[in-house]
Length: 272
Image 1 (tube, rainbow, N blue to C red):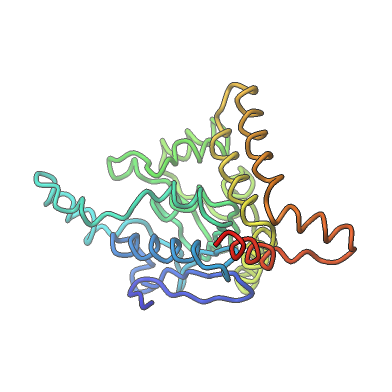
Image 2 (image 1 turned 135 degrees about the vertical axis):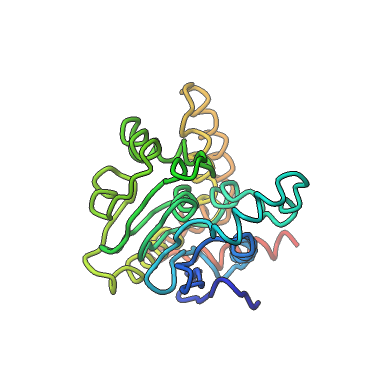
């Protein structure tokens, strides 16, 4: 499928989505949001895709929302809500219910450029990357559940500092405070490392991967440990019956690598 603001490529089952507006530092628009949403949805439906990576073309990752194309349109349509129909779906829900998602941040990740990757399963940054939740500078508040995810990643004090000052920080500090998970030594190593991590995550039973992500999402701020355990036990009962779990057992006994894709395909054929 042809897209105007993103580019897709696939290698070893890892689908790489590249934000492709380099002349605007990949500034985010509603069209980009819709295209990302559609591409990820299709990737989740594709049996050949096991995980996904998001990166940016050119020297920027995503410089935030396109002020001219987005904020100006919002201000002009504030009374009639005309832009609402152009908005993409629930991004956080999509990412947290998706196959493994890894961000490869090659440059500036500002505003929504940052908040869109916070729900990802892993964030890798190049030395040139920089980050800012600078909504306060525009008289706005953070979105995409980032007031939860920034605090979950960095802790209470650093989250307050990032969101209340709107400061921009570089990759080394972002890693030090936990905003990103890993920094590579040079830009050339970024995408291979992100794709390797995505493959490492995705090359596991897909049903269990989705359930693990759901457990992490639901239990992130859960105060009641009994409820945490109830969710885990319910997921385990489902896993015990899965073709992928049975394949893992059979492969272990036979001392061979498991073939989870074949197990899923066989189960789907039997069900139909």
